[in-house]
Amino acid sequence: MKIHYLDNSATTQPGAAAVEAATQMMRENFGNPSSLHRLGIRAEAAVEQARHIIADSLGTETRNICFTSGGTEANNTLLFGAAEALKRRGNRIIVSAVEHSSVYESAKRLSTLGWDVQYAPVDAGGVVAVDKLKALLTDKTILVSIMTVNNETGAIMPIERIARLVHKLAPEALFHTDAVQAYGKLPLKPKKLGVDMLSVSAHKIHGVKGCGAFYLRDGARILPLLYGGEQQNKLRPGTESAPLIAAFGAAAGEIDIAAGQEHVRRLNAYALERLRALSGVTVNSPADALPYIINISVAGIRSEIMLHHLERANVYVSSSSACAKGKRSYVLEAMGLPDERIDSALRISLCRDNDTGDIDALIEGLKSGIETLQRK
Image (spheres, rainbow, N blue to C red):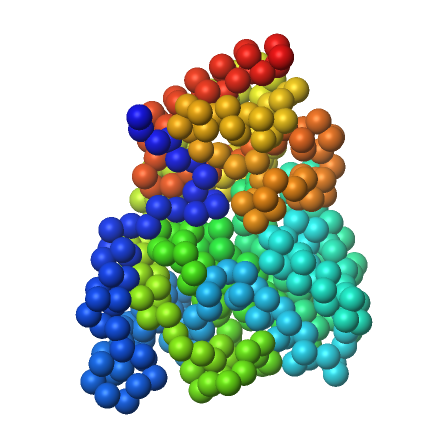
């Protein structure tokens, strides 16, 4: 029975090029990239090739790219590293109320350590309210972190506008964006956007889990979270995971934003047309959301119950962010949605591998779920 995988915001299936790159590194090119002999030099060359591909995809230089174990480590490193580096200049940190948990929980931790953490509210569509964010900016602001695309609703944030505002009103601050859900789907050029720091992850673009990276602009200073090695300019010491990094580079090399958007927009339109025809289904994502993500609520049926009903039909979706592990969505709460819609929310997330057959299977699964589960 065919699997209809519609949980691509949680993770994508690794592509053939990524799997081949990782396998080749593990079987043949297995040297430590820091070793001075031939095997080490070959492994280092593979790491640097991947760094070049990712830097090029972001329109920057290899010196600005640092590899991590994933988006969570990238976000933690940048938030804690910037806060520590800039604490003598001020103590205000601003994040949005709908950030991924790796930013949201980092901000909560920083608050307990003495930083003045403020949460910028969002409008009913889940987009940061820029005027309210502006009111939070002071000359004591040292760090602002606003995600590019929300991982639950697909809401796209006005990053370039926010960056200009931050640099104008809080010139001492570093501006960070978590671009994990946007990378490979939207054009991302940190210099053009005006961001100082940016996070990406491999397994959201058909790479392998366990690898991510961050961009740090020239002149921006952070302190490392880890100590003990000379790797990556001491920003992230420790032996690089060369197989995962090579796979990341292979996946990044296959990015085709225009083709991906064209394919997914057609699927998104088809899905929305069929979803809106179902009784009791409400779309929570804003109209101008990233087409890769559709958040819906199914009246009267709790998320986990419908999720497992769909699973029995080999249709796979999420109840919210995968990192939440079933907890109530604070993102949908911040949008002001009523409890019944939050408790019945599902996230459908698309990728280049999906087709209309996956959408048809989803619709049939929802229909049968509405018919049987609501009756119960």
